[in-house]
Length: 209
Ligand SMILES: N[C@@H](CCC(=O)N[C@@H](CS)C(=O)NCC(=O)O)C(=O)O
Image 1 (cartoon, rainbow, N blue to C red):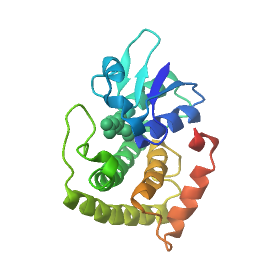
Image 2 (cartoon, helix red, strand yellow; image 1 turned 135 degrees about the vertical axis):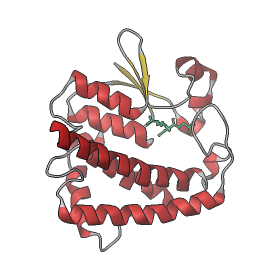
Image 3 (spheres, rainbow, N blue to C red; image 1 turned 60 degrees about the horizontal axis):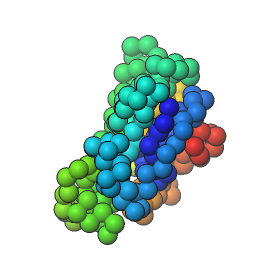
């Protein structure tokens, strides 16, 4: 299986981290977002959505959307279960994964893409150009405050985001915390529970995939 990938992109890191946790080898093909390779004719022929990650299966089937890719890998290689186990366990992973995505990843992307020069007229990914809105960058920063507060409250009561077991919610959580550095946000000094959780998960070999 071939993963069209860019090292610094958070959605790509989510997939690489997830696959590595399962011991799945993916052949990574770099699409260099620094030179806007994702917008060029070559990649346009591969993926008309112009986004990464994209997984190409042996039979040529193409999957975009990082969560769809992870769900496919989970079905192909169920151990260890990273989307939770049992009705309640699966619902809790889904809930925390969604919270991290909507409140953390979207907030950080909003802050970065509406402020960085490299994303001028590219405030949203995809085939259509969208202008930057500076107020959204500022709002993204405030949403990140709320995200870091949410993490600390949750991790004060639970070893992992979805409970007692490591899951895709923790994978994305760490990916978002690291991505937030791009907009100069770090774990607050007094957020000791978040720091403990971040250090533990960052030490997993798959975290550097
Ligand atoms: N919802 C998609 C989002 C994919 C996405 O936004 N990918 C970014 C990199 S993290 C991208 O392709 N950006 C291209 C661009 O900015 O032009 C997913 O989860 O895979």
